[in-house]
Image (cartoon, rainbow, N blue to C red; front, side, top):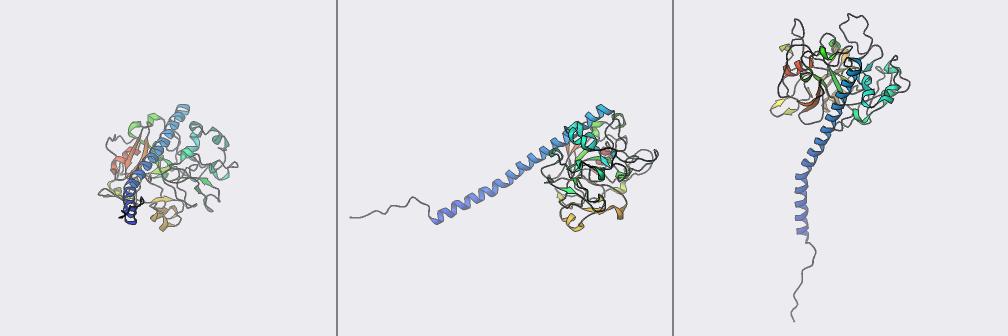
Length: 343
């Protein structure tokens, strides 16, 4: 009697390998899409945080009649044209608006008559979630320097204000929306919808890198400047000699954006720890002691550019390759050039 062999219900080794290969291909195709969706959600969260800061600034203006200034410092002589970031209380514009972003308890911990380096309750070491962009992984990062803060710890965040189209120290003469002692809305003569106010910044894990320290009124901590030099004459006029050297979004990172190469200057800060690693992290920096001027670029890990907020509270996205004249005049509040273009 003949017996007919019956095939086992299991997979052969070859079939199993084929199935695994198919699943591997499908997963490799799906992962980029999943990552893109996740980044889109992170970018939306960062944009919403910026929008809330913009709303808080307008609430502050409603209460005081002016936008918050570049920070609480010692302005000294009333005729001084330089903003001395490392003087007086050294408290940022973010500290000023804390009551308007549901952080009244944190605001109450600050002693506004005392330097940020001497705050007894350590409010500057608090890291509110709304100050963090999830794309940057800045949660748990702090700034502390033996020479600049006497090892006082400052929590880091991801948002800063445009103080000047030129340099941070020149914001009184060439103001941005958040600058000097504060600007009434009427001073923004180019129109609030045409004026940049806030943008994203990145942080480093390195504890001696000041970038993102939200309580300090320092360059790249809570203030930004574009490094577009003044061509001379009244008001602000962009100098052609600055083209290619300005602080466009993510400047100096040598990343390609389509067919364009982002160029520009590094962030000049009070000490650039581990210069080579900063370059590798696409966070180029230079030491203020060497360069003697202060400017820094908006930065993010979003592909192609950064989220920004205009002085009317509206949000948009500025590309890495934005036209330099466009951005310079968008930061300046009273140059008379109303710029409307794709960013």
